[in-house]
Length: 112
Length: 409
Image (cartoon, rainbow over the protein chains, first blue to last red):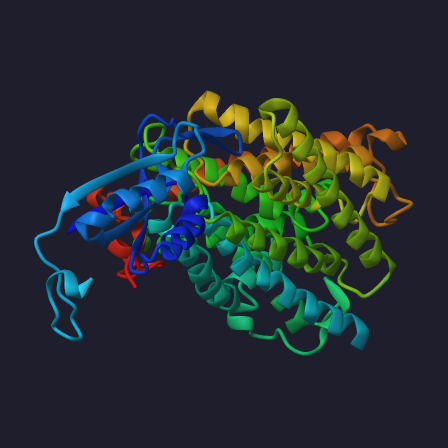
């Protein structure tokens, strides 16, 4: 099993969620995050005082899938979340040792 | 006695009271989210403290029997003798207790205005002492000088319809002194001090604008034609200043901001306050336009140049806008609007502008010196400023033990 963490543009969240659902991935966790990368921050002016915002708001989607679904999920996210501009985000893939469903006690791939 | 006048002043009093919670929202939105309740508290505790101070001693110091033009006597201590009959010296058609209540709301909001300059760093006990001492030793005397029968600025012929000197100049320059005495917020210029909730600020500005009709039109002390004229002048100047700020901001920075339009409106309201009962609506346009412009320059250019940390621009808005308004009264006043007033510069009377400038200067010097002394005296007994850790954690948690926004759930 793999955990796929995708940091994406906030405006792409609904599209990615729908696309993943259409490909049978229904369980996911979403977090509002801020961070920085190649994309520069923006400048805001309040009563003539300038503030440069270096950390930009993004959305992080976490989804755990069986190994054979990883390529499909990455392809879906990449396709839907991509604009081609700097700031589209990153996807991280890592191994997951085990999964448990709290209600039933099921574990492993059955729990996904 | 007139029931219409009485009803109007009662409603106006409630509108002026609403300005102080409005001010809490206006200021609260502009601080960082860790300080929003501490900032609200400055306005709300002023309502509590000064309402009591005014009834016990403030009203009689401001409006009691004159002593040498400087201060009212103690004859109305604890509202002794202030009852349901009118006091013909001040308002012949409404009960004395209603006049007292209307004036109370002015006394409440004025020290609260200063809190914008000391936001995000003043200790609460020191703030409470400052409110009480400032109200007693600065507001009450200045109110007597300008509005009290026998007050020396009133006898000088200074025109201040609704509180340019008494409210805005006195609080504005005191705010500058308080900002200088307290020093800058930690991390100013390095960390972001951007406003945390502008919709809150804009809502507060809207409540202030609404309440200002009670503040200015109510100062006619009757439901009459003058009150109507004041009402229109007030709205006109606010509108003109909002437009002026929007325009100059776009020229200077490329974009018109919502905070700018709200700030502009407040600047215009400040500027028209002393003039509103003496000028025409067309003059109000000019007073508003210039008011928006000078406050923008003070806040966006002058503050950065001199480097004082007037956190929420209490001085830039009320000190500068109030000064312009007081001088503008000497320029644009006309007896055709108010026969009890005077003609200003453009109506051929050169002397009124000089009288206005003198009254501004006297108020500024007194407010600056008195505020400095009050803060130094308080400093002998207790620290004025929170420590570094409290400042970093925010006033809400470190001074009041509560937070505005839960981080989790």
